[in-house]
Amino acid sequence: MNSTDITQHIAAAEEALGGFLEMLLGEEIAFQIEAPESISFQEAGLEQMAYLVVLSPQSTGQGFAVLLEPSWLPLLSKAMLGEAMEVGEEGADDLVRELAGQGYGAVRNQLGGSGVKLPDVSFEVLAHGNEITAGVLPDELWRVAFKAKVGEEPLGGVAFLSAVTAEESAVAIPQAVVAPRSGPAAPQPAIIASSEPVTVAPAEFPELTGDALGSETDNFSLLAEVELEVTVELGRRKLPLADVLRLTTGSVIELENLVGEPLEVYANGRLIAQGEAVVIDEQFGVRITRLASDRQRTKAFL
Image (cartoon, rainbow, N blue to C red; front, side):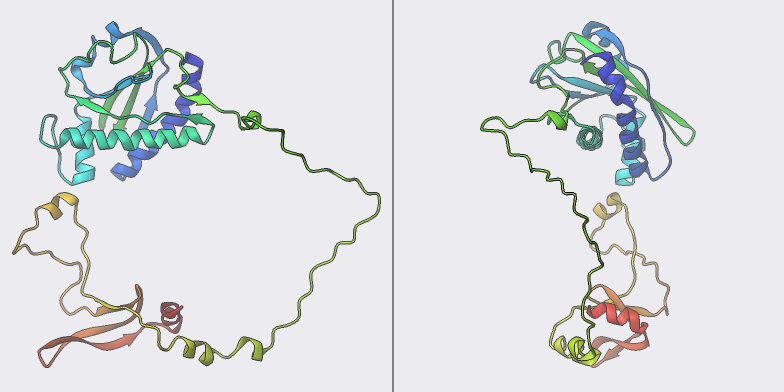
């Protein structure tokens, strides 16, 4: 892959990764990828010691590595799990591999829209301070640095991409020149010119009468025996995954609804009424205090 190929796709990768980080962190991110520069594997090894390395070994001569400043990990783990993780903690490597796969998928989908096909890859994680084994990456590499700013915190990293052209590398596929592997060419539709004028007129349909449509009562009578799932909602609460994993017997989840607020009644997931809690013969029940609008109730059945 030459410098021109990489430069042409940097804008698309920058957009994909920037959008991925904004979706993950829930805030606007300033993300930028710099121009590539040619280096050797030996030169790449001089700076990898200060980074957390996400590695895709070369199975077809096209391995690559992404080096992240360790400060990326607590930021991203806080967004995904609700708590900050540090390099070396249990589960940190699995989280980094998951993030690497999602980021790679975002870039792959973005470039795929322009005809560039990226291969399936697997990732390994090396904590900063560990060297990349010789032969895992090609000897000729492109160094592509990137940086981001989340709030007031600047973050950086670098990617090492193969500079060796191979059939398995990302290849642009011009859709207009793809031909069948074998067999005769598909026949092309004939275009017949005609000098006679063509009359164009709007289509006409007979009017629908009330008898044909049926009344609203008749329509609902067809659905009278259909069973619906009725749900009463006491309240809701959003919890980070880390808090959910901490739940044990006796844990209390505080709902957003206040004491005395009406309960909501849903039919097949649609709001149809509100009510208040009652006890009838030692059974829990709901007394309806307010019905939803006719339009909302109709949508619950249709």
